[in-house]
Length: 419
Image: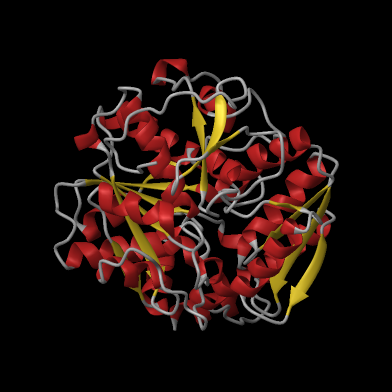
């Protein structure tokens, strides 16, 4: 199956279920979507994508949040906590300082558990119910575990999360704990956690809800649909570019799929598809390495480190979907330093928007690409911020100003302020 923008809408196979099926992106093999638990292709172990016999138009969308886009999803409704419909903020000072025609921040930290992961879980947990599984599992740098725990709890299901010991922000662990997940801290990094969870899933011990699961990306593609609708409403045009942080590359893959489906439905011209531009931290940048070297595959980085914990990932499992997304749309990928990420986090906060460090990577990357002349001054740009400031309060405190001790009287306060 070609992942190019010009690929035609595939014909519905005999094993489709109500116009929905799974298809391997490598060999094109198709599978019924809900007859068995399946994450990769039975024939070649390639990644799977969800396909639809009927692709919706903008006129088909109705309602609010993720399930406004039910006609673009496998079901009419999911296990929901009113996710989606996140703000598309104007940021005039950032827009001027970076030097683009228009800049908007799509703040996914305003989802129920404070990150974009809720969009995938509302679909993924619904699929788990359809399949009849009773235990959900994920590896996580924090946000996935929080979302899985919340949506699993909402759906009345057991949840198991594997976290790299000592590498996950306390706010995220607290969420998973309070929502009732069983938390296992692994003596290893995120990629080691994912290896273990994949083995557990392969043995039938749990249903995997990392972004290797093709249904999770269906929920995440609604980010792209909301961005397009927001820009069309405000500018009567789609954005020229969408800049987003990259960890496992699920969002890059999901947005690209949303745009391909709109092109196939005749709702979006190939030439108007936004340039997908990925940003990674310098200490965890295997996707950037692949783009810069024009490589067909991403080399796994075994040692990764960055204060942007949500993207501290060395083996992005969705790279086979994300690399074509970046290249086919004319986008690029860039690595930024932790210092550049923190500076961007402060600047976003200066607009009244609080995001965790990984989120700020998008603005840091845009600033760097604009300075290098890769991004033009006449571009309309959306930057995706993926998680709320309070996901990592320690990082926020370190990036912010220090409290100042003062005496317990007004004169003392005034004297301190005058110094």
